[in-house]
Length: 282
Image (cartoon, rainbow, N blue to C red; front, side, top):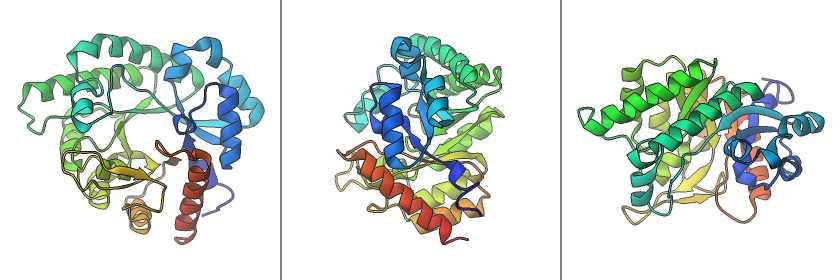
């Protein structure tokens, strides 16, 4: 594998990790990380075109490539596990109509930007497939997948809010050809939903993109784990990259950092970790 060619073209940074207020800030911070590829949060472009509408032109001038997109859902409260369980994704009825309107606009925006893969958190999936809320979320996911499919785009579900086995069952039941997984090993730890390596094996055929993020498990059941810089937490990175090789993963590695006050430095650390892990497998 060519570290300076094909491999590096698959490494990106989540734009929201850099907390930019404008595309100009995002470009400057990406350049500071040493990575000029991005998974782009699409909500700012949809919500604030006065600031973000020139993003494609500014990216082209700076040599920045968009590898994928992401959108969030309205009303999400991540302050506790219970709050996000109640408010996350497309599951809550109170926010579904607004989310559905936003999702349709986001799919059109992604197509116009030339983005082929967009990820999001769908919300908490009931463990029991016979539960009414399970069918409701399943139907809404099929609806979301179809609006992206009509535009030739794929959708990735973020891991962590359910076990890998439960997510696999949902995907198998939906049978949406353009629906896959954005695999985040740290989320499995943060949410307490199982061993990330075992989860990767379970979801292997469905994994379209991975997030490079690390975490330590909580010591207090029912509370969040702690996100930490990549390489300092409980994700076993050597095993993780071996697992990606085993499942024949050909997608993108996207560095995500959602905590801490030195995001650029932490992203550089994560980049070095990926480089080391990939180099050790060559």
